[in-house]
Length: 162
Image 1 (cartoon, rainbow, N blue to C red):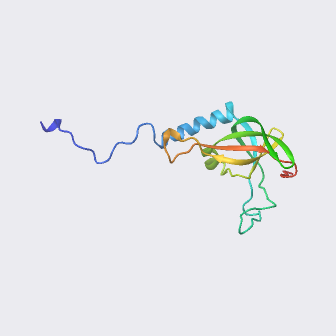
Image 2 (spheres, rainbow, N blue to C red; image 1 turned 60 degrees about the vertical axis):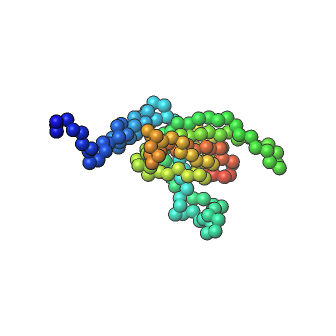
Image 3 (cartoon, rainbow, N blue to C red; image 1 turned 30 degrees about the vertical axis):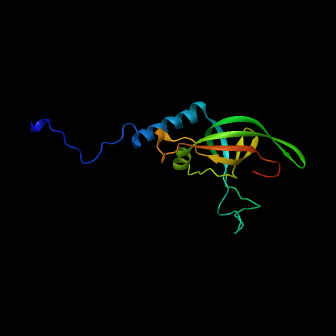
């Protein structure tokens, strides 16, 4: 009879299909798909936090200094034109949404997407105006897999890549 008795294990078993190996596999597949099949290349211009003179109270900078561009592959959605009405009239600018693969950027390219940075898509410069992290891997709260950046076309004179 003693051979049939159930005993509780000391530790629960690891979760099925949700471990580090599975997350690494998903990263590898996403890297290949985005860089070799369906992704588009852009140039990312990050702000230099060391060389930009930020206001001590407000944290804003009139003159921003940018680091050299980094080539990044991402999924890009064209949103059309954003129209705003101001005192000076109607302002119509194109906008895009860029879906970055978070682990590829942070682990492999040491790049962190920030509002206020600029990207070159095609021949047009866009400013990142809003960020979101909408997707979790396998529904795990601690493992975000995407950075979504809403971008609008930069006004002439706002950004000089030269």
